[in-house]
Image 1 (cartoon, one colour):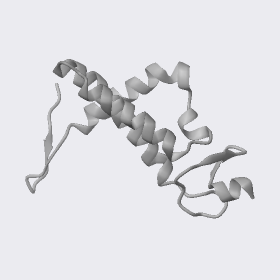
Image 2 (spheres, one colour):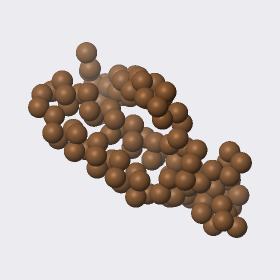
Image 3 (cartoon, helix red, strand yellow):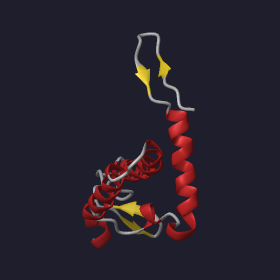
Length: 115
């Protein structure tokens, strides 16, 4: 059962520990099909936009709380993958990366990938 946590200042947080557990389970279930493709290959921002919109549509087409709970972790995972990659810096020039590529296993920006 999900519960929130409260700080000494009265701020209530969602049950991130439970959310993380559910999200990791979803990734593990899908791993045989997708592997770690979210971090290894050319991934234009338009790809992420399409994936996220699809996941959001699935959430809002849910007919019950159980279906909502089943669909929401997929959107959280997409956002987490985007966040994980977008805060990374190019391993060559150190600039922030929006659309990334893999060059010899390292995440690089388009300019360094082509350069």
